[in-house]
Length: 385
Image (cartoon, rainbow, N blue to C red; front, side):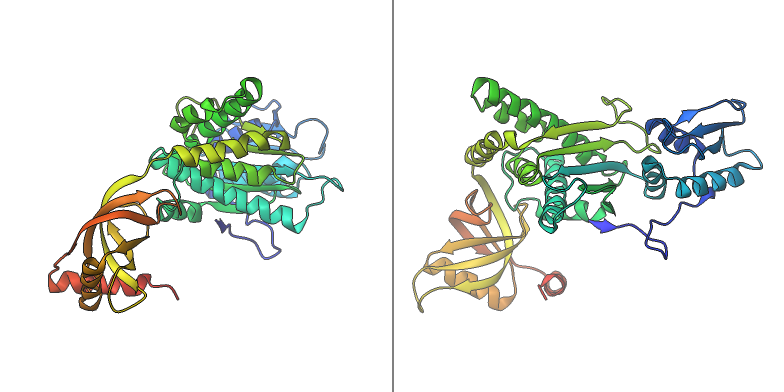
Protein backbone atom coordinates (compact mmCIF):
# COMPACT_ATOMS: atom_id res chain seq x y z
CA UNK A 1 0.00 0.00 0.00
CA UNK A 2 1.26 3.44 -0.84
CA UNK A 3 1.12 6.65 1.19
CA UNK A 4 -0.77 9.80 0.38
CA UNK A 5 0.68 13.23 -0.40
CA UNK A 6 1.83 15.21 2.62
CA UNK A 7 2.34 18.88 3.30
CA UNK A 8 5.64 20.34 4.48
CA UNK A 9 4.74 19.93 8.18
CA UNK A 10 4.04 16.21 7.69
CA UNK A 11 0.23 16.49 7.78
CA UNK A 12 -1.89 15.30 4.84
CA UNK A 13 -2.11 17.95 2.13
CA UNK A 14 -5.39 19.88 2.14
CA UNK A 15 -7.84 19.39 -0.72
CA UNK A 16 -8.12 22.08 -3.38
CA UNK A 17 -11.34 24.00 -2.58
CA UNK A 18 -12.06 24.38 -6.30
CA UNK A 19 -12.12 20.56 -6.60
CA UNK A 20 -14.39 19.98 -3.60
CA UNK A 21 -17.97 19.00 -4.41
CA UNK A 22 -20.25 20.75 -1.85
CA UNK A 23 -22.67 17.78 -1.90
CA UNK A 24 -19.84 15.37 -1.09
CA UNK A 25 -18.64 17.60 1.77
CA UNK A 26 -22.17 17.80 3.19
CA UNK A 27 -22.53 14.02 2.96
CA UNK A 28 -19.25 13.49 4.82
CA UNK A 29 -20.19 15.99 7.53
CA UNK A 30 -23.54 14.26 8.07
CA UNK A 31 -21.86 10.81 8.08
CA UNK A 32 -19.54 11.90 10.89
CA UNK A 33 -22.35 13.31 13.01
CA UNK A 34 -21.99 17.02 12.24
CA UNK A 35 -25.22 18.95 12.60
CA UNK A 36 -26.67 21.33 10.02
CA UNK A 37 -27.94 24.48 11.70
CA UNK A 38 -30.13 26.89 9.80
CA UNK A 39 -29.11 28.93 6.81
CA UNK A 40 -31.10 29.40 3.60
CA UNK A 41 -31.58 25.89 2.25
CA UNK A 42 -31.22 27.02 -1.35
CA UNK A 43 -27.87 28.73 -0.82
CA UNK A 44 -25.80 27.32 2.06
CA UNK A 45 -25.83 25.35 5.31
CA UNK A 46 -23.85 25.90 8.50
CA UNK A 47 -22.47 22.74 10.10
CA UNK A 48 -21.16 22.29 13.64
CA UNK A 49 -19.33 19.34 15.24
CA UNK A 50 -21.30 16.71 17.15
CA UNK A 51 -21.84 17.39 20.83
CA UNK A 52 -19.66 19.99 22.51
CA UNK A 53 -16.32 18.63 21.32
CA UNK A 54 -15.30 21.84 19.53
CA UNK A 55 -17.81 24.65 20.22
CA UNK A 56 -15.78 27.29 18.40
CA UNK A 57 -15.85 25.49 15.06
CA UNK A 58 -18.42 25.70 12.30
CA UNK A 59 -18.24 25.39 8.53
CA UNK A 60 -20.38 27.07 5.90
CA UNK A 61 -21.12 24.79 2.93
CA UNK A 62 -22.77 26.14 -0.22
CA UNK A 63 -25.70 24.17 -1.58
CA UNK A 64 -23.93 23.90 -4.95
CA UNK A 65 -20.89 25.02 -6.88
CA UNK A 66 -22.74 27.55 -9.04
CA UNK A 67 -22.60 30.49 -6.64
CA UNK A 68 -19.99 33.22 -7.08
CA UNK A 69 -18.66 32.74 -3.56
CA UNK A 70 -18.78 28.89 -3.58
CA UNK A 71 -15.02 28.34 -3.90
CA UNK A 72 -14.33 30.98 -1.25
CA UNK A 73 -16.79 29.36 1.17
CA UNK A 74 -15.33 25.92 0.49
CA UNK A 75 -11.84 27.30 1.11
CA UNK A 76 -12.99 28.66 4.47
CA UNK A 77 -14.60 25.29 5.27
CA UNK A 78 -11.41 23.37 4.46
CA UNK A 79 -9.37 25.77 6.61
CA UNK A 80 -11.82 25.46 9.52
CA UNK A 81 -11.69 21.68 9.34
CA UNK A 82 -7.90 21.70 9.28
CA UNK A 83 -7.85 23.77 12.47
CA UNK A 84 -10.61 21.88 14.26
CA UNK A 85 -9.82 19.70 17.27
CA UNK A 86 -12.72 17.39 16.45
CA UNK A 87 -11.27 13.95 15.46
CA UNK A 88 -13.75 13.52 12.62
CA UNK A 89 -12.52 16.73 10.94
CA UNK A 90 -9.30 14.99 9.92
CA UNK A 91 -11.23 12.02 8.54
CA UNK A 92 -13.43 14.35 6.47
CA UNK A 93 -10.40 16.12 5.01
CA UNK A 94 -8.76 12.79 4.19
CA UNK A 95 -11.91 11.58 2.43
CA UNK A 96 -11.90 14.77 0.33
CA UNK A 97 -8.17 14.55 -0.43
CA UNK A 98 -8.01 10.84 -1.26
CA UNK A 99 -11.26 9.86 -3.00
CA UNK A 100 -12.17 6.21 -2.62
CA UNK A 101 -13.77 3.72 -0.27
CA UNK A 102 -12.39 4.03 3.26
CA UNK A 103 -11.29 0.93 5.15
CA UNK A 104 -10.14 1.22 8.74
CA UNK A 105 -8.51 -1.44 10.90
CA UNK A 106 -8.28 -1.08 14.67
CA UNK A 107 -6.57 -3.16 17.36
CA UNK A 108 -7.10 -2.67 21.06
CA UNK A 109 -3.99 -3.79 22.90
CA UNK A 110 -3.45 -4.56 26.58
CA UNK A 111 -1.32 -2.16 28.61
CA UNK A 112 -1.29 1.63 28.59
CA UNK A 113 -4.43 3.00 26.87
CA UNK A 114 -3.57 4.56 23.51
CA UNK A 115 -0.07 3.05 23.44
CA UNK A 116 0.96 0.74 20.59
CA UNK A 117 3.96 -1.59 20.54
CA UNK A 118 6.22 -1.87 17.51
CA UNK A 119 5.10 -5.46 17.06
CA UNK A 120 1.45 -4.43 17.25
CA UNK A 121 1.95 -1.71 14.63
CA UNK A 122 3.69 -4.12 12.26
CA UNK A 123 1.02 -6.74 12.78
CA UNK A 124 -1.67 -4.18 11.97
CA UNK A 125 -0.02 -3.29 8.65
CA UNK A 126 0.58 -6.93 7.74
CA UNK A 127 -3.01 -7.88 8.53
CA UNK A 128 -4.37 -4.98 6.46
CA UNK A 129 -2.24 -5.91 3.43
CA UNK A 130 -3.19 -9.57 3.72
CA UNK A 131 -6.87 -8.70 4.02
CA UNK A 132 -6.86 -6.49 0.93
CA UNK A 133 -4.94 -9.14 -1.01
CA UNK A 134 -7.41 -11.89 -0.04
CA UNK A 135 -10.37 -9.68 -0.94
CA UNK A 136 -8.89 -8.82 -4.36
CA UNK A 137 -8.39 -12.51 -5.15
CA UNK A 138 -11.89 -13.45 -4.01
CA UNK A 139 -13.37 -10.64 -6.13
CA UNK A 140 -11.76 -12.28 -9.16
CA UNK A 141 -12.82 -15.86 -8.34
CA UNK A 142 -13.91 -17.83 -5.30
CA UNK A 143 -11.57 -20.37 -3.69
CA UNK A 144 -11.16 -21.87 -0.24
CA UNK A 145 -7.39 -21.54 -0.57
CA UNK A 146 -5.51 -19.48 -3.17
CA UNK A 147 -1.87 -20.01 -2.29
CA UNK A 148 0.29 -18.22 -4.86
CA UNK A 149 -2.54 -17.99 -7.37
CA UNK A 150 -3.46 -14.43 -8.40
CA UNK A 151 -0.57 -12.96 -6.39
CA UNK A 152 0.19 -10.48 -9.19
CA UNK A 153 -3.42 -9.37 -9.49
CA UNK A 154 -3.79 -8.90 -5.75
CA UNK A 155 -0.43 -7.14 -5.47
CA UNK A 156 -1.49 -4.54 -8.04
CA UNK A 157 -4.68 -3.84 -6.09
CA UNK A 158 -2.86 -3.48 -2.77
CA UNK A 159 -0.38 -1.06 -4.35
CA UNK A 160 -3.24 1.17 -5.51
CA UNK A 161 -4.62 1.46 -2.00
CA UNK A 162 -3.52 4.70 -0.35
CA UNK A 163 -2.57 4.56 3.31
CA UNK A 164 -3.15 7.75 5.24
CA UNK A 165 -1.65 6.54 8.49
CA UNK A 166 -3.18 5.79 11.86
CA UNK A 167 -6.29 7.84 12.64
CA UNK A 168 -5.51 7.12 16.28
CA UNK A 169 -3.34 4.77 18.29
CA UNK A 170 -3.98 1.22 17.18
CA UNK A 171 -5.71 2.28 13.97
CA UNK A 172 -4.86 2.28 10.28
CA UNK A 173 -6.88 3.83 7.44
CA UNK A 174 -6.59 3.16 3.71
CA UNK A 175 -8.54 4.28 0.67
CA UNK A 176 -9.13 1.93 -2.24
CA UNK A 177 -9.90 3.21 -5.74
CA UNK A 178 -13.62 3.61 -6.45
CA UNK A 179 -15.47 2.56 -8.43
CA UNK A 180 -12.79 0.48 -10.21
CA UNK A 181 -11.66 -1.26 -7.03
CA UNK A 182 -15.06 -1.55 -5.42
CA UNK A 183 -15.61 -5.24 -6.23
CA UNK A 184 -12.81 -6.15 -3.83
CA UNK A 185 -14.25 -3.98 -1.04
CA UNK A 186 -17.82 -5.26 -1.39
CA UNK A 187 -16.41 -8.79 -1.42
CA UNK A 188 -14.41 -8.02 1.72
CA UNK A 189 -17.52 -6.80 3.56
CA UNK A 190 -19.63 -9.79 2.53
CA UNK A 191 -16.81 -12.20 3.40
CA UNK A 192 -16.19 -10.70 6.84
CA UNK A 193 -19.93 -10.80 7.59
CA UNK A 194 -20.03 -14.47 6.55
CA UNK A 195 -16.92 -15.19 8.64
CA UNK A 196 -18.44 -13.51 11.68
CA UNK A 197 -21.57 -15.66 11.29
CA UNK A 198 -19.49 -18.81 10.78
CA UNK A 199 -17.45 -18.18 13.93
CA UNK A 200 -20.63 -17.67 15.93
CA UNK A 201 -22.14 -20.84 14.44
CA UNK A 202 -19.00 -22.80 15.35
CA UNK A 203 -19.29 -21.63 18.96
CA UNK A 204 -22.95 -22.65 19.18
CA UNK A 205 -23.02 -25.89 17.19
CA UNK A 206 -19.43 -27.08 17.18
CA UNK A 207 -19.56 -27.48 13.39
CA UNK A 208 -17.36 -25.91 10.70
CA UNK A 209 -19.71 -26.33 7.74
CA UNK A 210 -20.61 -22.65 7.82
CA UNK A 211 -17.02 -21.84 6.81
CA UNK A 212 -17.36 -24.10 3.76
CA UNK A 213 -20.55 -22.30 2.76
CA UNK A 214 -18.88 -18.93 3.39
CA UNK A 215 -16.39 -19.57 0.58
CA UNK A 216 -19.10 -18.46 -1.86
CA UNK A 217 -19.19 -15.12 -0.01
CA UNK A 218 -15.43 -14.64 -0.44
CA UNK A 219 -14.03 -16.34 2.67
CA UNK A 220 -10.69 -18.06 2.09
CA UNK A 221 -7.84 -19.41 4.17
CA UNK A 222 -5.95 -16.22 3.37
CA UNK A 223 -8.73 -14.00 4.71
CA UNK A 224 -9.07 -16.14 7.84
CA UNK A 225 -5.33 -15.85 8.46
CA UNK A 226 -5.49 -12.07 7.98
CA UNK A 227 -8.16 -11.80 10.67
CA UNK A 228 -6.10 -14.05 12.93
CA UNK A 229 -3.15 -11.72 12.42
CA UNK A 230 -5.30 -8.71 13.29
CA UNK A 231 -6.69 -10.29 16.47
CA UNK A 232 -3.68 -12.14 17.87
CA UNK A 233 -2.09 -10.20 20.71
CA UNK A 234 -5.01 -7.75 20.95
CA UNK A 235 -7.93 -7.56 23.32
CA UNK A 236 -10.30 -6.70 20.45
CA UNK A 237 -10.14 -5.84 16.75
CA UNK A 238 -12.43 -4.13 14.28
CA UNK A 239 -12.63 -3.67 10.51
CA UNK A 240 -14.89 -0.86 9.29
CA UNK A 241 -15.79 0.37 5.81
CA UNK A 242 -17.28 3.69 4.68
CA UNK A 243 -18.24 4.09 1.02
CA UNK A 244 -16.87 6.91 -1.08
CA UNK A 245 -19.22 9.87 -0.82
CA UNK A 246 -18.18 11.01 -4.30
CA UNK A 247 -19.01 7.68 -5.97
CA UNK A 248 -22.00 6.77 -3.84
CA UNK A 249 -23.16 3.62 -2.08
CA UNK A 250 -23.01 0.33 -4.01
CA UNK A 251 -26.22 -1.59 -4.58
CA UNK A 252 -27.29 -3.78 -1.70
CA UNK A 253 -25.57 -1.69 0.95
CA UNK A 254 -26.84 1.09 3.19
CA UNK A 255 -25.22 4.52 3.42
CA UNK A 256 -23.61 3.89 6.78
CA UNK A 257 -20.26 2.82 8.16
CA UNK A 258 -20.04 -0.96 8.34
CA UNK A 259 -18.14 -2.39 11.30
CA UNK A 260 -17.19 -6.02 11.96
CA UNK A 261 -15.62 -6.98 15.28
CA UNK A 262 -13.45 -9.96 16.24
CA UNK A 263 -11.83 -10.98 19.51
CA UNK A 264 -9.23 -13.43 20.86
CA UNK A 265 -12.11 -15.77 21.71
CA UNK A 266 -12.60 -16.26 17.96
CA UNK A 267 -9.07 -17.60 17.40
CA UNK A 268 -9.75 -21.32 18.05
CA UNK A 269 -12.55 -21.37 15.46
CA UNK A 270 -10.43 -19.39 12.98
CA UNK A 271 -7.50 -21.77 13.38
CA UNK A 272 -9.73 -24.77 12.67
CA UNK A 273 -11.27 -22.97 9.71
CA UNK A 274 -7.85 -22.18 8.18
CA UNK A 275 -6.88 -25.87 8.25
CA UNK A 276 -10.24 -26.91 6.81
CA UNK A 277 -10.20 -24.40 3.96
CA UNK A 278 -6.76 -25.49 2.76
CA UNK A 279 -7.72 -29.16 3.02
CA UNK A 280 -10.89 -28.88 0.92
CA UNK A 281 -9.33 -26.92 -1.96
CA UNK A 282 -8.66 -29.43 -4.77
CA UNK A 283 -5.68 -29.67 -7.07
CA UNK A 284 -6.23 -27.98 -10.44
CA UNK A 285 -5.66 -29.65 -13.80
CA UNK A 286 -3.79 -27.21 -16.07
CA UNK A 287 -1.75 -26.97 -19.24
CA UNK A 288 0.99 -24.44 -18.66
CA UNK A 289 3.08 -22.52 -21.17
CA UNK A 290 6.21 -21.22 -19.53
CA UNK A 291 9.88 -20.41 -19.86
CA UNK A 292 12.48 -22.60 -18.19
CA UNK A 293 14.41 -20.36 -15.78
CA UNK A 294 16.17 -22.98 -13.65
CA UNK A 295 17.25 -26.63 -14.01
CA UNK A 296 18.58 -28.97 -11.34
CA UNK A 297 19.39 -32.68 -11.10
CA UNK A 298 21.90 -34.82 -9.26
CA UNK A 299 23.87 -36.20 -12.21
CA UNK A 300 24.27 -36.14 -16.00
CA UNK A 301 21.31 -38.49 -16.46
CA UNK A 302 18.07 -39.34 -14.73
CA UNK A 303 15.15 -37.22 -13.50
CA UNK A 304 15.52 -33.61 -12.45
CA UNK A 305 13.59 -30.52 -11.43
CA UNK A 306 12.93 -27.39 -13.47
CA UNK A 307 11.33 -24.08 -12.66
CA UNK A 308 9.05 -22.42 -15.19
CA UNK A 309 8.10 -18.78 -15.33
CA UNK A 310 4.45 -19.07 -16.31
CA UNK A 311 3.24 -17.26 -19.42
CA UNK A 312 -0.25 -18.74 -19.57
CA UNK A 313 -2.37 -21.59 -18.29
CA UNK A 314 -2.15 -20.91 -14.54
CA UNK A 315 -2.57 -17.81 -12.38
CA UNK A 316 0.79 -18.16 -10.65
CA UNK A 317 4.13 -16.55 -11.49
CA UNK A 318 6.28 -19.70 -11.37
CA UNK A 319 5.87 -23.45 -10.96
CA UNK A 320 8.31 -26.20 -10.09
CA UNK A 321 8.11 -29.44 -12.10
CA UNK A 322 9.82 -32.81 -11.52
CA UNK A 323 10.61 -34.39 -14.91
CA UNK A 324 11.93 -37.74 -16.11
CA UNK A 325 15.20 -37.91 -18.04
CA UNK A 326 13.71 -37.41 -21.50
CA UNK A 327 11.50 -34.48 -20.50
CA UNK A 328 14.35 -32.91 -18.51
CA UNK A 329 16.61 -33.02 -21.58
CA UNK A 330 13.90 -31.36 -23.66
CA UNK A 331 13.48 -28.67 -21.00
CA UNK A 332 17.25 -28.07 -21.04
CA UNK A 333 17.12 -27.71 -24.84
CA UNK A 334 14.30 -25.16 -24.50
CA UNK A 335 16.32 -23.23 -21.93
CA UNK A 336 19.37 -23.05 -24.20
CA UNK A 337 17.27 -22.08 -27.21
CA UNK A 338 15.27 -19.47 -25.28
CA UNK A 339 11.89 -20.89 -26.24
CA UNK A 340 8.93 -21.74 -23.98
CA UNK A 341 7.59 -25.20 -23.26
CA UNK A 342 4.08 -26.51 -22.88
CA UNK A 343 3.33 -29.12 -20.22
CA UNK A 344 0.21 -30.52 -18.60
CA UNK A 345 -0.23 -31.59 -15.00
CA UNK A 346 -1.98 -30.94 -11.70
CA UNK A 347 -1.32 -27.73 -9.82
CA UNK A 348 -1.07 -28.99 -6.24
CA UNK A 349 -2.22 -27.04 -3.19
CA UNK A 350 0.77 -28.16 -1.11
CA UNK A 351 3.33 -25.39 -1.25
CA UNK A 352 0.71 -22.86 -2.33
CA UNK A 353 0.01 -24.16 -5.87
CA UNK A 354 3.62 -23.64 -6.87
CA UNK A 355 4.26 -27.25 -7.89
CA UNK A 356 3.03 -29.07 -11.00
CA UNK A 357 2.43 -32.73 -10.19
CA UNK A 358 1.96 -35.63 -12.64
CA UNK A 359 3.54 -33.74 -15.57
CA UNK A 360 2.95 -35.06 -19.07
CA UNK A 361 3.26 -34.09 -22.71
CA UNK A 362 6.12 -31.61 -22.37
CA UNK A 363 6.92 -30.03 -25.74
CA UNK A 364 8.66 -26.99 -27.17
CA UNK A 365 6.60 -23.99 -28.25
CA UNK A 366 8.07 -22.57 -31.42
CA UNK A 367 8.02 -18.77 -31.76
CA UNK A 368 8.62 -16.35 -34.57
CA UNK A 369 11.87 -14.38 -34.20
CA UNK A 370 10.05 -11.17 -33.28
CA UNK A 371 7.96 -12.95 -30.63
CA UNK A 372 11.08 -14.59 -29.24
CA UNK A 373 12.85 -11.22 -28.93
CA UNK A 374 9.86 -9.72 -27.13
CA UNK A 375 9.77 -12.70 -24.79
CA UNK A 376 13.47 -12.43 -23.95
CA UNK A 377 13.09 -8.71 -23.31
CA UNK A 378 10.11 -9.34 -21.01
CA UNK A 379 12.03 -11.97 -19.10
CA UNK A 380 14.97 -9.60 -18.68
CA UNK A 381 12.71 -6.86 -17.33
CA UNK A 382 10.99 -9.25 -14.97
CA UNK A 383 14.15 -10.79 -13.59
CA UNK A 384 14.83 -10.17 -9.89
CA UNK A 385 17.52 -7.65 -8.98
